[in-house]
Image (cartoon, helix red, strand yellow):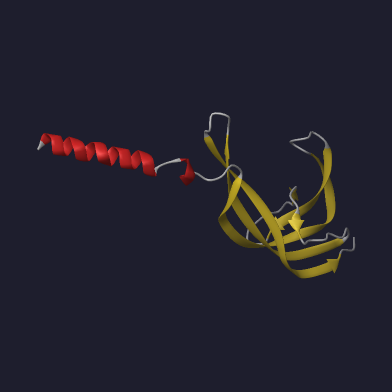
Length: 133
């Protein structure tokens, strides 16, 4: 009876080890969609120059506000909004979709790390008006 239990435990353990192999892990740098959200944003008629946190160089950014957030100040937006062609001097109300991806990668010791990347896509320009001082 004890031999039978031991045999079952050993077989079960081997089965678990064989079924959990590296093929079950995501591929290196593989993206999978974590979330998809849609927002209405306001885009200011002017831009701002900011210092890039990664390259330490200066870059021009649009200024935005989220429609559903009570904000008094415009915030610099460093990312690219796909399909959005900004024209200086115009104020926009736009509908954008934000796709957040999980990105899996491995270091030299095959330890998996996960990070998030965001992609911004213009869905529709709801309003575009020439801004006059």
